[in-house]
Length: 328
Image 1 (cartoon, helix red, strand yellow):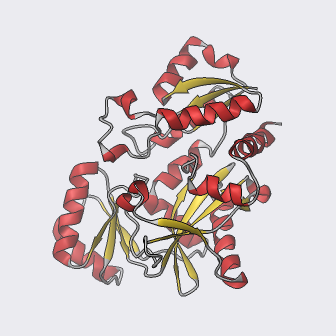
Image 2 (spheres, rainbow, N blue to C red):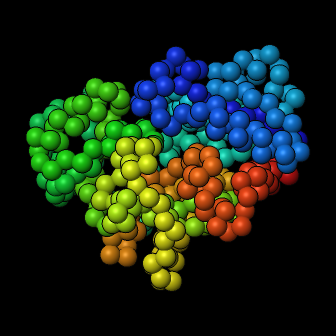
């Protein structure tokens, strides 16, 4: 097959490599690793790049050479950014991997995702959305009373990934400071959730619909092996944690897997996703759904795939095969 890869690099947008505001972008070495694996599978691979580069190819008709787009593009400067490539593929009838524009938009919006999950009967943290363009800072305490929330509170930008901006606050003054700061940096609403004690877990899912399957449960721990009380960007990107394959017993494992598959299928996500949760006394609480999870070597996804006997190339091939089923 002729496969075009869409992806984002910081250099595409003139962003310094040290700027952590865009840590969900890829690196060239990561994309080249995927390219090499696809070529070893016998595919012809074309490095398209960012959604903007893809749009130029659409305008020039170059897209007609591709049998499929393998999409890793996060997009830029919009709450619809992850939906740009899927929407373009849908408009031009180009097969592509990963979730469609609807799922990308929904899952990037943490607030709407949690409202939808709650409707499905999934446990979620109690929380609210603070929008500095609508609300005043003195409305925060009334919000806490309205939603019967107690400190500590977790604040996070509503449309970001890679644990960017996540802040734990312990009183009203810290809450005001956090939402003011995050609003000024990210220029978007801030989701404020009641902190869920327990364990930080992630559930990678491979496939779509009834063919979707959980390929593992992992727990993020502190370097000393104790539970991760609060998983920030620092822990995620700079290795200040360790990842273990988790086994909480048949009953709790089943509860986790059923919750993950329910949200994956209900949105629905296609081909793959990673479901992030907190596990408190055996009860899973949904935090986020990631339809474009890290797919690099040593990522949670790659490690879980390896544990069930899939090489990195076979993992990519599974994603392509899942996508092809939608177009055949």
